[in-house]
Image (cartoon, rainbow, N blue to C red; front, side, top):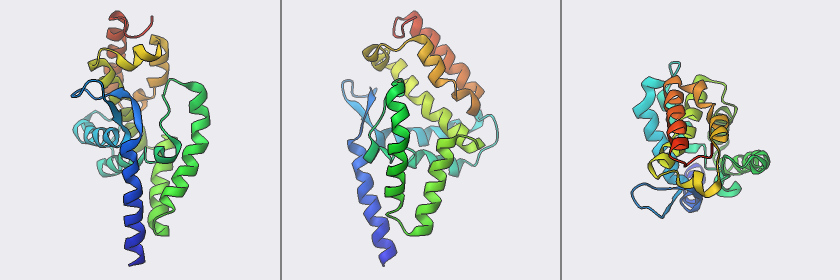
Length: 195
């Protein structure tokens, strides 16, 4: 019973992810910012739809798990805008502490297994993690593009920043990187990214 109580305690803690707001707005309800729980669901579903575009074979169940847990650390650490280099450097420590606290709420072996999966995602060395990172990076780009560059314009993002920050897409999916470059070029022509 204690095992179940620990799992339920984390489950209720995870509800807080619905309150962590990101910088991009949802397409279906303009004006409302997406939350991190919505992002995690959306990118996990994207993995199922885009599996064929991974550079190397992936274990889609592991990829989906990674994507469902990758941002739970934002409950403690908050969301950092990917183009904010200074904040991103500080974020790593906060996220590691959050991962240890959150996964530490679980029974030891289960918490360790999820922490290791989260660390694998963060290091982006395995095929599963590279593909997961590619999806995690392209989905905000797609949302920005379909919202006429909303967060790029609000934060003065440049074409070069978009290329540099998002290049890791290439390591997980060349097809998605080609699409990302097309999005960046179109966004630059439309004035949504600074040239």
